[in-house]
Each structure stands twice: as C-alpha cells, then as structure tokens.
Amino acid sequence: MTPTEMLRHDHEIILRFLEDAEQTASSINTTGQVDTVEIARMIDFLRNFADNNHHSKEEHHFFVTLVEHGMPVGHGPIAVMLCEHEEGRQLLKTIENAVADAKAGVASAIKRIADSLFLYVELLRAHIEKENEILFPIADSLLDPAEQTALTAELQLVEAAQGRGQEAYAKFKQYSALVDLP
Image 1 (cartoon, rainbow, N blue to C red):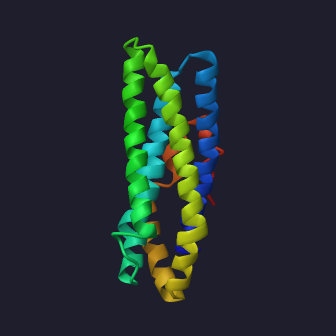
Image 2 (cartoon, rainbow, N blue to C red):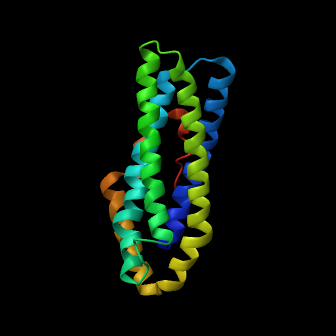
C-alpha cells in the first residue's frame, strides 16, 4: 500500500462519517433538538481520528516528505491543506462551545451547532477532494517506489502508536462500519 492509498482510505472513512454528520445537522435544523451525547461522539471521532491520527500523518510525515522534494510550504497545495486543517480545528471548537451553551440553555446554540456542522462537512469534503485530485497525484509522481515504501512504514508506525480507526472507535457501534479497515 502506498502512502496516498493509506491516506485515501482514511478519507473514505471520514467521508462516510461526514454523511452522518450532515444528517445530524439536518435533523437539528428540522427538530430544533440536539443530542449532545451524539455530538460529543462526533467531536471525539473528528478530533481523534480525522485530526489527531489522519492530519498528524499528513502534517508530520507526508507533507514533510513533499517539502523535502521541493514542494513549498508557505504557498501552494501544502499551505492550503494546513490552513484548512486549522479551519477544521476551529470549527470543532465552535461546535464544542455551542454544545456547552446548549446545555446551559442558550437557545441560539442549537442553530450554531447545526450551522457549524454543515460548515465542517463542506470544508472537509472540499479538502479531501483537493488532496485526492491534486496533491496525491503530485506526491505519487514525486516519490519513487523506495521513498513510498519508507513513508508507508512511517505512517504505519503512527497508526501502531495511535491505533487505527477500528480499534479506537469500536465502542461506537453506529460508526463500526465506518472504521472497518483491512
């Protein structure tokens, strides 16, 4: 498996999860009700799998390797990806703060949760498309087979240290199909 294949597989998991997040946001808008436990699970999944695991592999290994091969970090695809990673982190904080406000009875917090979930879903879908369609093909052309093998080994070490999706999230039965990794 190449590094981009590993990262694309993470993307598939995240994209399927985003479908649930979008449905949850729609339900919140329709009913005006929010299940704060469900939102906490979503935040946990997104923070721990999408950000701490997947984005960590990209930021600390994949992007570093691309920069070593001449890709700029201050502008271009890597700069855009890093900016979007940070934007996603900020949206998760907004959702988390809105959940706390909703628990405290702030009526406007419910709409903030739904709106922020929709923004997060839109951001990550576009982000994943850019990586899959632009950055990953560039990476595949830059890295020779030996470099790809070495980078795959690094990414596998991250997964071994942090756990893969199926181990980390088996407790969430509704997400078990999302994290069924080979």
